[in-house]
Length: 216
Image 1 (cartoon, rainbow, N blue to C red):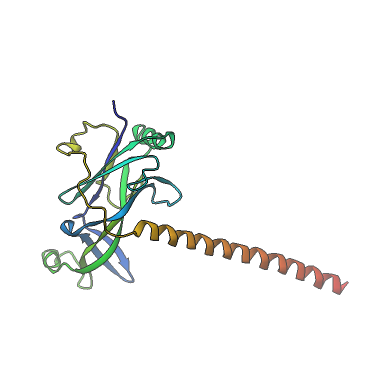
Image 2 (cartoon, helix red, strand yellow; image 1 turned 180 degrees about the horizontal axis):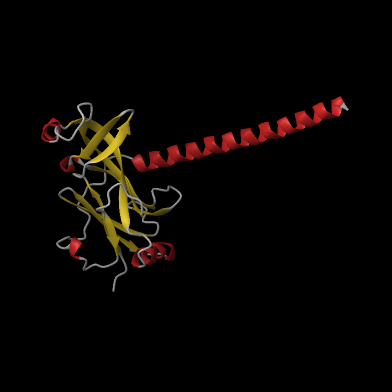
């Protein structure tokens, strides 16, 4: 039997929220406008250093992406021991959920849904419809959307009717590579800050020693 991880990475129509200052901003994604980056990564917990595989290089296995209406499903077939490690995690239910990262390109107010939900929303709150590009999906136990899932059971009823052939176009830009560069720069800045603090601490200690020595 083929070893594979199957899952639901996103329900684009699901409404989520972010706190913007004192207000709450609700948003969802228009499924028909979703694009996919030239290279979509599959990671653990959105951690750039924990890359499981990518659609372009297939480092540890094949990643298949299937969008069915507002839902984004995936299938990962491991081809290395490293890839099989994540298969075992899912099989043992150590990993149970999924998530995705989306590069927002365009956003506008969803006036229709705002009017429908006016009775439960504060007048300062708004709902946005986002348009953009998916460049990463991940395995996680702390997703934004709890309706997501992952499984090793090909007969899971939630996967019924899916033809496991990638049906999305991977030509939406090099956002994954840009994301890696940004994260690398963040690490460099963090390392520089830590080094600066160590140097400041050492200089301070030495300065205090000199002061004490002079007082004697």
